[in-house]
Image (cartoon, rainbow, N blue to C red; front, side, top):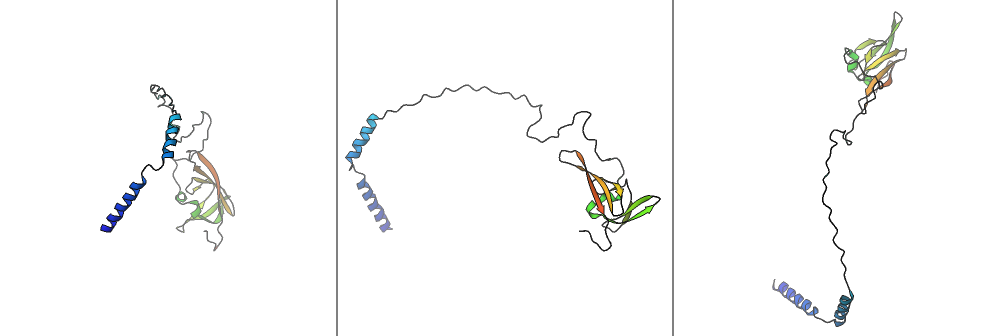
Amino acid sequence: MKRAAAICLCGTLVLGACGGSGHPDLEVWMQDQGKTAKGKLDPLPQIKPYDPFTYNAFDLPDPFKPRKIEPTKGGGSKLAPDFTRRREPLESFPLESLNMVGTLARNKTTYALVRTPEKDVYQVRSGNYLGQNYGVIIEVGDSELKLKELLQDGAGDWTERSSSLQLQQQGEQKR
């Protein structure tokens, strides 16, 4: 501990000895520079008084919130599902989980045989609904079932999409 104190004392003495005025030419130069330097300060800027702003656009739509643009009267899409009709059993399954396993013709009407994931088989024809996107069957063919689905987009509008269900061959598994 005494050794550290002695080193600090010696360092202080050495630094104190260096601080003397050993550079008179530097002091003369500093004095000459100070005589010729003239400083000029810009005047302070004028402060304008605060004029408050009254915001009167509270009844206008917020430009930062997404909103649906309303169609003009007399135009627009009339596409929408019928929410008042009774839902059919095959509407509780996603379209991807249903399999068309055959067709059946009776009284000039072609029916498709559709199997659910629970292995139940239903007879469906044109006009029946299936799938969770309000899909209505528009055509029953020998090898496929064509339907139109109604989907709602992000703006809340209903759009129509064509889909089909292909005939599932014996032993073939849908993935």
